[in-house]
Length: 186
Image (cartoon, rainbow, N blue to C red; front, side, top):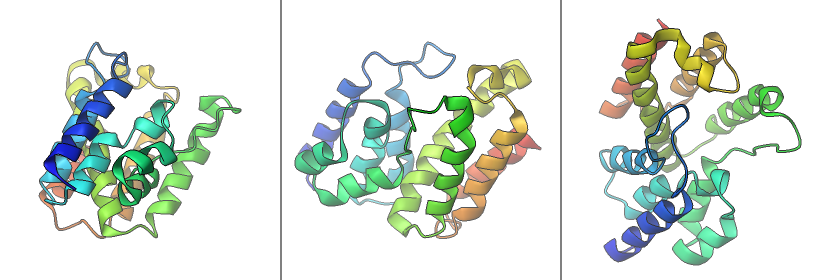
């Protein structure tokens, strides 16, 4: 992949997230995929992984399909994005599907490859940075912005991710992720 193609991925992600904000904030959503890509780039110079990191929420949160990504950015990028995409189970209310969706993510991580784990770690570290920043300011009120409001359920999920990321445990990003989990969840 060329730098021009990576720039296309960044532009595409910006377009797909143009009107969205981070939950409970006025922060443009594109900040999260960009941070995810920056974190991934601290672990690899592979531009397809970095492109997948910036595109990681396009299938989940827009009308983009895996096939669209494959056509535009290639099979590997599309597969990497798919590895970090949840089935939103839109026929079930979010509060009811949350546990099922998160367990499916944890189960999939058990068989994931190093490249996939880079993207998951980058995504979740970006989320934990945001959570920690807001947690320091508003404490447990931070959970009110989510469909599932119980802190212990989020602790289960983020801790489960930490335990499943066995292939990237030797990275600074993993150490930071682990430290933030301890700070937010005790």
